[in-house]
Amino acid sequence: MTQNYQAQIYVTLRPSVLDPAGTAVKSGLSHMGHHNVEQIRIGKYVELTIAADTEDAARQQLDQICDQLLANPVIENYRFDLQQVSTPLNVGS
Image (cartoon, rainbow, N blue to C red):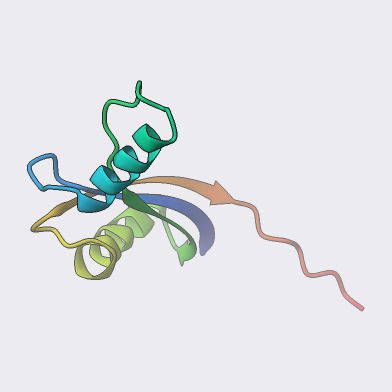
């Protein structure tokens, strides 16, 4: 039986990759008087719901989605959290 799963996906630059957006935000915060901010890394957050027969099947498909579209594996890392969500019952009219 197919289940729905909610995924929260986090894509971040690899530690060895420079982050010019993070540097710009850190500079802006410093100009605003927030001198105690030491490091900023900018990333992406994606939520999606996926239907799959098993959690393992959902995880395999999410790995493919992240690796092929959402993240650039050369410069980015990704991770995701996955949980099963209940589907609403169809009530007869």
